[in-house]
Image (cartoon, rainbow, N blue to C red; front, side):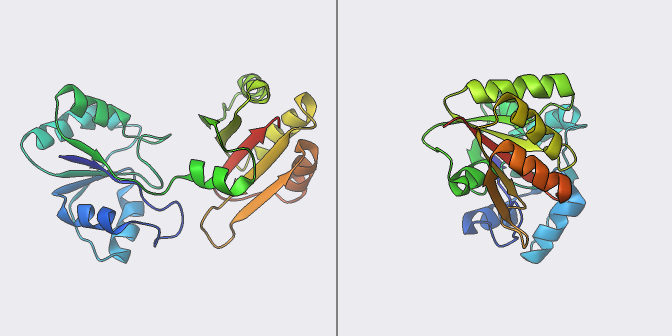
Length: 220
């Protein structure tokens, strides 16, 4: 059995009782960063064998984990924060299990995407999630122009080091867009800052942001 378990995006208490039970019952926990996940497990009094499972070894580790599952072992899959497979390692392992017709269970839980959308005050009846914005400036500009053209609210993850530049691009292509920067969700310095792109760009130029950032864009 493969159990896909979302983990807290900040506050270590944001994990379900069912998720904790699944972690306690697992034979092995596949974790994006075993040191990071060790903090969560220790906080909840859980001690289990862990193996690293991240973007650089996911392809190689998938086969061995599938074989363990085929032999009847319980494998729990977690990443550093949120739902595995959503801009995080995981989809290859799930796909491989599905192809072998091995049992897969996905538990509900924390997600920065829907948390940011619910707290943004932007239209939430439909949305588009684009993962991380491209690093290259030309590709990023194209993606932000596409976001403005959509009817749905667009949601992206963004680096704090590129946030002001991305907001500057939005100020050029869609100065009247409604934008929300959701930062450090569920943590001590949680912030939702809404406004026009130019105003937000000026703010973050003057106050360089830190931490995990979710950028939401609407043309409504």
